[in-house]
Image 1 (cartoon, rainbow, N blue to C red):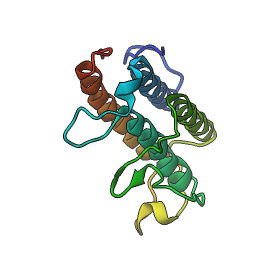
Image 2 (image 1 turned 180 degrees about the vertical axis):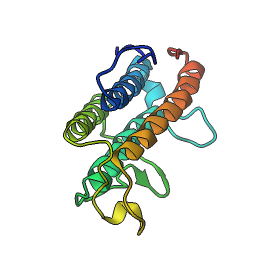
Image 3 (image 1 turned 90 degrees about the vertical axis):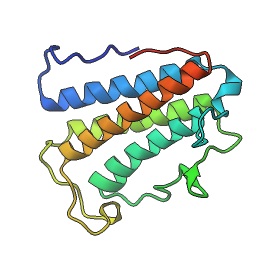
Image 4 (image 1 turned 30 degrees about the vertical axis):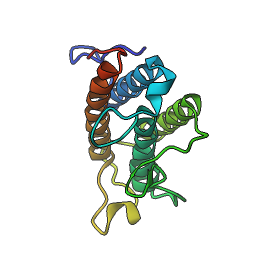
Length: 168
């Protein structure tokens, strides 16, 4: 697993710092979900009803929405493909391996986009921005880091309740 990016770890740029945190949170999420027993993957232990597999697909779509649909301004067929009936959704035939691969592929795309652009660059206009001016790449990355950190904390609680791993 990727080690936690300590604030004292030398980094060549702010871009590198953002990518280290995203990689850490993404891989920590994968590690926690991978350590859960199969029955726990589609079971919710919370009143809100989400499952660990639903969290995986949600995080993949969060990166898709903010990087591809948002910053890049790409036409995305189903930017909200992680939702059905106003809640997170995973089809019965989607597996942990499928969702982990999709999350990692989305992360690789994010890394490629981020390393090819300056943090101050403003995103392309498009529907992601709901009629307001697009944000800078740095603001998008800051949002992604907090999204991952928050959801990894949620997953920590779920994993602990399920008898799985706990940690930072």
